[in-house]
Image 1 (cartoon, rainbow, N blue to C red):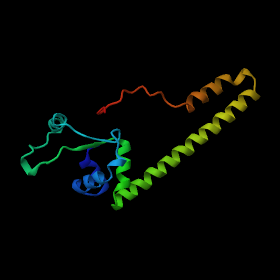
Image 2: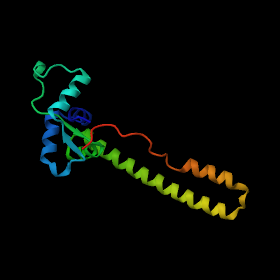
Image 3: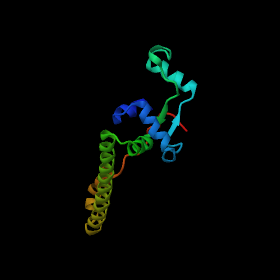
Image 4: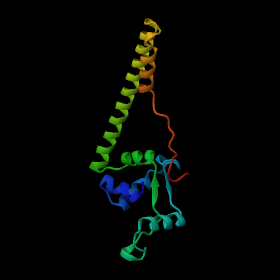
Length: 147
């Protein structure tokens, strides 16, 4: 996400957002954040049909781009009410994911115990349950900028 979009999401100006990021650069390694080149910025401007840089003041600096990790980290360095709420939501989501993974592991153990208990007549049922609980294969091609 662009710095301007994250700033709007967290309820701060882009200038304040970038100030806080620069004050905490050690929290933003290259796989969390990078700055667009002039060519990339020009391509982005032509894709989203923005006005010329001279019109309406424009930007003086090239925009920063944040990966999902950088977007989460940005919420931790900002003090706006919205950024704090976003940090709390992210923590809660990770706790839910951990709980879901733990419950899937318990389900797999119980399924294995049941399979050992019963003879081959339920093999099809057990296999169907395993397919339903298995994670989907990551077949999508990743999109976006590569560092």
